[in-house]
Length: 483
View (cartoon, rainbow, N blue to C red):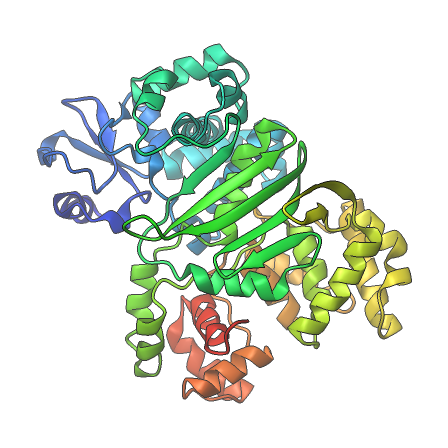
């Protein structure tokens, strides 16, 4: 966006652009989200930055009134597939905290120096500053949304020491952690140590569509779903975790809340990022719906289901196995097979809310999957072979993948065709422009909405929905609800 376009956004206080850039005011030393209710500053005093980290680096602090760190993340990191976007996805997942900047650079295939140069040029800040801003965002949520001690908040947010945490809070927000906690609105969490957070999103959200999607695919023992919630056990870097996403309809507008129990509090930023990706909470649904509604065949469906999201994934490796098991079978049949696999090979954990096991590791599936899986031997070998490649590191699959490189790597494996490679890409990297004409539910949904149901004709029609074909796919899935 040009300066004039961004300035018009802050004049109109349009919340759709929250999280997509920040406006910094030289006369006050403060940066704000675009929808900040404060008086619009003079044009001569305003500088726009693509990230809050860039504003930090330039010496600005966050506005206490609009709290720009509480805005949803930018949808740009899924729309774009360049190195900056891939880096931002990995930074949100906590790669810098776990592996340092060299680890981030290695995952992206660049030297540390070159990566820092690219991010500084594109986003106004290097990887350390971007990671620090992400930690500050998590740290702002915790004093408000939990009763964790300040020490636990510091380490949950990924800070190395309480002193570093306190200094960052003062520098970024001009407030101490206790002052942030004092700004809490509404009741405190019910139990000390409980993690219960609101996950912000922009625009409308058809959360029930996501809950229905997850419910149809929930693996008993590892996941539990209702029409308004989804819970599961999750393997995180610090150990097993339990989390639940639920719809809070008691507020003026529907909100998504996250509850969690963690082995290691430092895993919380990673969990928050993965939960957000699971429900596609950084999307810009108003822009997407406006574009898709231009097609008369889709207008009524979008009006019925505004704010539909594309389901993401919390574990790329797990998703690939689930997709391979689900090839050319019904959702119910795939769920039955995955339930048997998890019952036989999944690690048992302390029970919570009816959940007492984790999805099997890739090593377990590679070594013993052929004892449990049923079906053609070639298909079983393909699944166990993919698990072995993931376990050994021969195949790397993650948020920071280049879309086309990931697709080529998957298609090179035995037993993986275009449907699986594209389905995995859609759900792991968040690519908004994936279409699945070979999916039976997509073709059935197209028929119900009056679109061509034959794959070649449907593929040709879908080209007019670019660059939002993943959301077209989600609408076609939803047309044959619940899955």
